[in-house]
Image (cartoon, rainbow, N blue to C red):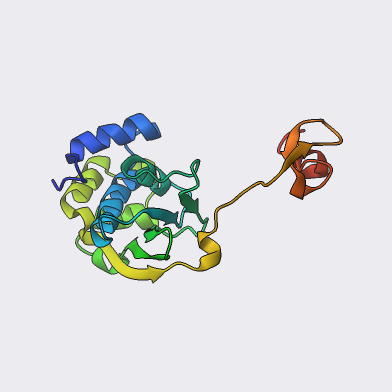
Length: 188
């Protein structure tokens, strides 16, 4: 079993279960991906993260780095690709790590999980975790990236004012009424 950064496989699996709600294979694989990316960037670099799926992978980034969606150091793009990048927050130079489907031939349970060729309830979880523990980052491809300047910008709400309709504080740049009162509320 290959370690995941400072953790043994089993310890990280327990950490994932406590954080994610169960020991999700995607978060565990993501742990190997994050550690591999960290190994490929200079140790003294302040980095941000880009994650290309909202499923599981952001949790691995949050567990193993200081980057989180909440602090703005991780951006999540809903591309549905199992890939992440860590990059210098000032220059945009970094590394992208992805699951390489060409490296999955020796790992049929990981391949089945990734491509969803069998329903989750029919997959052999023990065999899947065994393959993940033995494969580690060997199933990953790595490439240098240069993040676009516009993707490196920090999100800001800007000035805050009161909504003319509900009275709640909201970003002034959205107009006189907040987005919820303007029809974008998820509530009835």
